[in-house]
Length: 383
Ligand code: ADP
Ligand code: MN
Ligand code: MN
Ligand code: MN
Image (cartoon, rainbow, N blue to C red; front, side, top):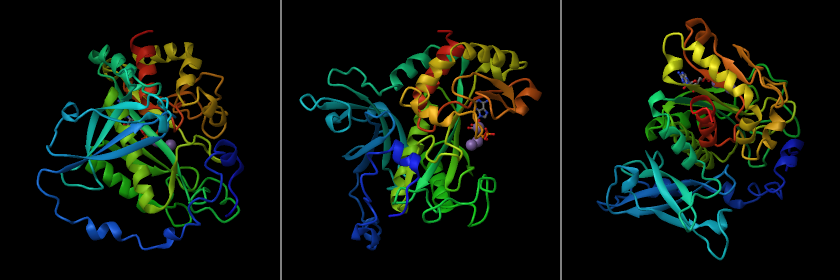
């Protein structure tokens, strides 16, 4: 096994207990098994639903499948289901049954046909939301500011790891030449796994995720996709299912997706810039509303930092250093076209005097429900 970057070991001690994948002889076997059976005719009236949920880390996803004998068209027509919450960090072993409530449905790009992906949120035995269910609060905030039609567009950065847990395509035991040529790069020495990225793009469109684009990022094997703008809670649903599709596709490709915000020291980290607007910001002279929102955000910087990664700011401490296109975690700043600020006003927004702001602080592993919730409560609900 080749050398793993030090910061990766430091922050992922558990997954690095040994070379888990490459030693398996199965890794070298033919992977055509599924394709031989994929076309089997399924008896009419049987539909497979993959229930997807966020586990007790608030960061990782789980899924399981079930057959339905009718074709639901809305989340509320799907059965509430349950799972063993003691195996996902969401319940005690002695009282483990945890509930899955369907919230959003997407077409399944893996099975196709009428099969579906069903994004759920999770509830304890007594139907209280679990600790990592931030969707409930987000929905409640959104319901109180629907009139403002809040839009959210998220830029999701990530990196791909090879099965030895080093960044995919990096030379054995070392680093590629310094960053510069890789962002939006073209050529086999600049970008790795474009086919996976393209497949993800198509799968998202097929599934019904409003993916708006994709680009290679500053570190080789680092990529980004953008989702939205979507209205309110839906924006966060879309991001979570897009993450699921990416993890699931990467299984087939034999690589691992990492949303760690700073996998390799001295290289750009991964963020999840949240672009946000309200009806008043999008209206004529909306720049005034944008500036008001920035002023409100400036007063509660640390409150936002605490919910912009799953470890209360600890993950972002590694990323928001003030270097590598970030602002320091300790300071709030805003500026036009400035990518070293907490909040950026895009140049086009400044010149048209209307549009949206970009909050550059959320880490790539943030929970978009928590980010949407915080922005709505600070900027619209004045909490
Ligand atoms: P960047 O220049 O920061 O890399 P991108 O092009 O990657 O910008 O992403 C821009 C994001 O802004 C997209 O996710 C898009 O959906 C979102 N967006 C565009 N207009 C609005 C708006 N009015 N409100 C909220 N989000 C918006
Ligand atoms: Mn971008
Ligand atoms: Mn980016
Ligand atoms: Mn951005």
